Each structure stands twice: as C-alpha cells, then as structure tokens.
Image (cartoon, rainbow, N blue to C red; front, top):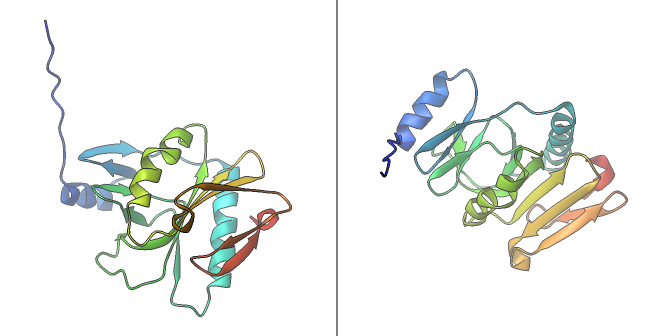
Length: 176
C-alpha cells in the first residue's frame, strides 16, 4: 500500500507575514518553512567580528553591512545569512535584500552541509553576488568562493590575509 503524505506549502507572502510575528526565525525554501536554531558563543563572536571589520572599512562607501536579522531572497528561498554586504540600492523590502555582493556564513555542525551545498547554489545564482564566504568556527580556516574564479574555493588560515575583491577590502584572518 502506498501512503500519500499531505504537505502544506505556503507562499512567499505568507512566510514574510509570519516572520513579522514569529517568536523565532525561520528560513523559507520552495514553499516550506524551517526553524533556525540559536548560535553558539563562538559563532556569534566570529560573525560579529567580520561584521564590525567590514562595516568599519566600508564607512563612507555606498555599501551597507547587515547581520543575522536581515534576510536575503535567493530564487524561491529566504535565508538569514550571518553577514552580507549590499552596495547598490536594494529597497524592494525593508525585511530582505536581493542584491548582496558578499555573503558570509559561519559554519556549525548542524548547518555545515546545507551552507556548503544548497544555500551556496542558491546564493551563487544571485546576479549581484561576487563572493561567498564560509568561516569554520572551530578552527582558523576560511573558505571563499568567488564568481571571478568560476566559484572555485580559495582557503585562508591564521596568518593569511583575505582580499575581498567585490569590496576592495583586505582583512587579516586573525582579525576575524
């Protein structure tokens, strides 16, 4: 006997309205909604460090740096990246952005596979995105995927400096 499982899919508008009143954050993927777990202390420190470094270095530029509570729309999905930078006018909504040039995710055991695969594919489909950054929270390693390099990964370790070409900003791994 074959079982037919009922699934309830919601629209993007239903999701966005729900997020306005939700007690916790959720991500949206092709009509399905997923709750987001809280982050560790180390995760928060790393995300905060790169946010602060980029925000400081971009002061006076047209670029705006966002952290954790701002969603990005990527195809039929909404995600909460740890950090993103938007350099062009992107005012479709005050609750999400559609044209980031750089997105940063701090990896955890629970999110690693999703961040490295499906999220990466969705993000790389954004015409504006130039760099996707994955930060290992348990070791001094950063992986950067760049459009200009055909989305091939470059690795950076403690003692290295990373040049974010999309922002013309150089950052020491140790400062992150």
